[in-house]
Length: 235
Image (cartoon, rainbow, N blue to C red; front, side, top):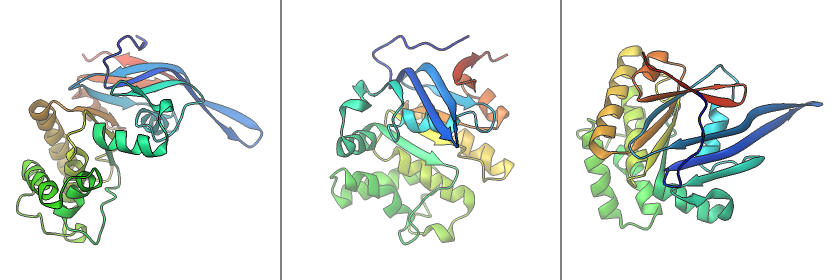
């Protein structure tokens, strides 16, 4: 079943977006007139072959890149209508991002890393650190708040990255292979954490993954193939 945009109230709405890249003398069509929506408290996996355009789609959903045609809306506002500063502010308010590599700042503690998004948004340091402390406790790192990334395990660093993505209480968190560098046990624990946070905080998660077991645990799975998305029925 193909995915069509249908509602103006989606957290993220992609309407007939296309994206192509030039490789030498040829043009590669990565996304082709693709439409989809992410709703509140959604749990969505995006799967597909390597090179199919999953990360490209995630970047467009997050307003980090522009489609060649079509439109993207985040929390009801068209990305194309905003300048770079406005986009950054809107993303900071409405979206969180988690990548395969945690991208934590090595010179700062876990607490400081998680507090930074709210401080960038204008929150006082004491208030931002209070939010960060609560989130780190939620992800099981209440006793590790003062540790720098180098003193944390891979799973702990990814939990800090998840807490940081949740700091501004976003509508949706976009995740690109968030468990790709973790051992199976740690990956399973991180996935269970995401399910718990989704139930507790009602935040949407969109996860690009090669892990079909993880995808099967989501409410929706979208398969990206030939530039289009198709809904995968869960058996």
